[in-house]
Image 1: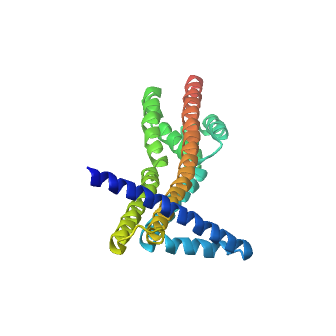
Image 2 (image 1 turned 60 degrees about the vertical axis):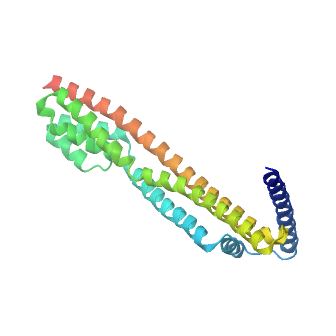
Image 3 (image 1 turned 180 degrees about the horizontal axis):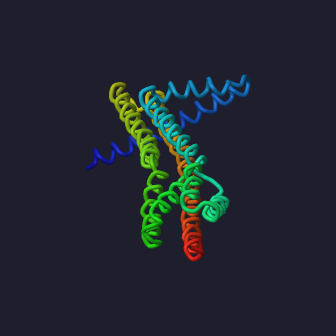
Amino acid sequence: MKKFFMFLAGAGSMVLSATSAFAQEEMSAADLLSGSEQPLNQALKQKFIEGGPAFMSLIIICLIIGLALAIERILYLSFSKINTKKLVEKVEAALNEGGIEKAKEVCRNTRGPVASIFYQGLLRYDQGLDVVEKTIVSYGSVQQSQLESGLSWISLFIAIAPSLGFLGTVIGMINAFDAIQAAGDISPNVVAGGMKVALITTVGGLIVAMILQVFYNYILAKIESITIDMEDSSISLIDVLTKYGQKK
């Protein structure tokens, strides 16, 4: 037990010494940069190399794939967003002019999930409004799933990126202890390298997770907006079809 407490005391002094050395190194680097500013791309490249190409590459891959999926979803949702009030007005005018077939043609020529839901409902108009309403609800769930496609992968990369960073932190600490064991001495210079790798990988993983989280929340907000439009316009379609049936 005495040896254990002696080990904890030595490890604590080692961490404090390493942190002090790291702070001094950062201050000297800041003084150097104040004299001649380093370009941002060169600074990022240097930190990437210092953090370890293996783990930093995995973190960058998470960022690239996550951004690609997020951009694809944003473009898809942007094209899915339409003026639903105008669509309802066009469908109502088409019903009055040419009946169900004319209304279906309007829906076929309009992009977005709302027009697809309208089309599926109009296909079953001859079976009654109850069937139309059930069709709209069922097909609305299908369109909802399509809007949310790929979000699980984005959330996966949000979770993996900081996990990789923390894994790099643990490995950096292990390397620091290995260096201490090899040198046989608790010296700040011995452990500073491992501590630096640990901190850089953690920062990299957290930054990637925060960037992807912003895109993820933005996508959720757009999906919520489109879903509200789908629900509101579906109710309007039922009202339009009810009026059309009464006129007949």
